[in-house]
Amino acid sequence: ALAARRHATQTLSKMAPGAAPARYHAMEERANLMNMMKLSIKILIQSALSLGRTLDSDFPPLQQFFVVLEHCLKHGLKVKKTFIGQNKSFFGPLELVEKLCPEASDIATSVKNLPELKTAVGRGRAWLYLALMQKKLADYLKVLLDHKHLLSEFYEPDALMMEEEGAVIVGLLVGLNVIDANLCLKGEDLDSQVKIKFLLNGGITAVLDQKHYVEELNRHLSCTVADLQNKIDCLEKTNSKLQEELAAATDRIGSLQEEQQQLKQQNELIRERSEKSVEVTKEDTKVELDTYKQSRQGLDEMYSDIWKQLKEEKKNRLELEKELELQIGMKTEMEIAMKLLEKDTHEKQDTLVALRQQLEEVKAINLQMFHKSQNAECSLQQKTEAISSFEGKTNEMMSSMKQMEERLQHAEKARQTAEERCNKMKQDSTLEKELKSEKEQRQTLQKELHQEKDATTLLKTELQQMEGLKKELRKLQDEKQQLEKVCEEQEQALQEMGLHLSQSKLKMEDIKEVNKALKGHTWLKDDEATHCKQCEKEFSISRRKHHCRNCGDIFCNTCSSNELALPSYPKPVRVCDTCHTLLLQRCSSNSS
Image (tube, rainbow, N blue to C red):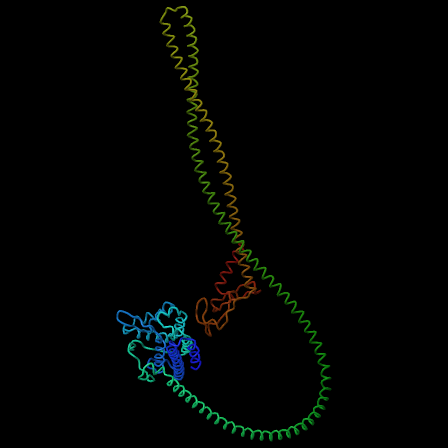
């Protein structure tokens, strides 16, 4: 307050004499409001922490705080003229928070949705309640102070929110984040004027009076003095207790010193006794040393014998380890052979499938070739018949050609004779007519000759085609023979592959048996089996348990009465019925 006053006097000295009282009054109001806010926040935090629960709207320090905050927000507010009249409410600047900070939109919407609120003052109070419950009152007011150019529309230049005091109050409000408040807004009458106990009838002027602030400070100081007095009393009590404890401790130290002297005397007695006992033990140790030397000679001899035995055992162990390594190597080789055999079987199965597909394809090709050959033979028969008919026709044509040539010769001879006659008898008209008729006959014969020549050329071309078809037929027959040979070879290969497959499967089974013998059977414990695995009859004193030496399971006597020689056992041993039949089948297949 003193610093604020000094600052005020400095600014007033620089200002004009007319404006000084009003500015000084505004500064005093700001300082008083800031002090009141400090006090109310301090009282609220202390009372909330001592209460130790969430605060409700009926809590007096909280009501006091909201009244002071409301007066701080109202300080320096501009009066806005509307159609209804003059309006002066602090809800206008609070509405800006929604635009500047999107997080505050929930508060604005919930305030607008409250149907009971009718005035701007009620909405502003509801907004402050919700911001305090969210613990973001200081953050929202700080956003407002960061945009003072927007606040200038609502506040005077000398207002608390426009000066440094506003920033100080926002900093104080950060401490309220410690408080948990649960304020109900539905049943509250926020539009009406709030009356608090410390507010006097004079209104805001009495609140802002410095005298009340000083009185409040005095009360606060008296409380602190009383607390300090209580603390001093407590310290005096603890001091007296500590003095009593110190006296008790000194008495205890004296008793401990007496005990220490007694212990020293006892130590001297014990030392004398120990020296005597040491001399006795030295003599005993000499005697024991002599006996030890004698016994050590016998032990050395025993040690040499045991060492020799150990060397022999080490040699035996090394030999056994070598044998074990050999067996492990054999086992790994067997496993590799198993894997290779499996790969071979898979490959052979794949090749078998491929060969079967090829066989089916060859069979299909053979069928096609067979059908083609049948068609070709039918067409050959037809063409041979056509050729034979054509040959008959050609022979007939040749004979007719010869006849025609003979006729031509006769006709030429007759023509010559006729010409001679014509020369002789030019006057005779009958000869001319004969000549004309003979000429016409000759022309028709020549035409028939040309037609027959064309037919012979056609027949020759057909004969050539027939020869080509015969060649193709021979080729097809050769291909058919080759395909039949390939088919027979593939069938033989398939039979050989089947034999190889059966042999490899048998080898696989033998290797699996040997591998089982090397690995060791999964020997079922006696406690695990209560019933026979085959007939599922319960074991008893009369029905006893027997292990199958092949599979390792437990059976009764009737289900495991057979005996067979296994690779892991040199003599015939007990085997269950299922293993007996399987092993006999394998033996029969191996022999076949």
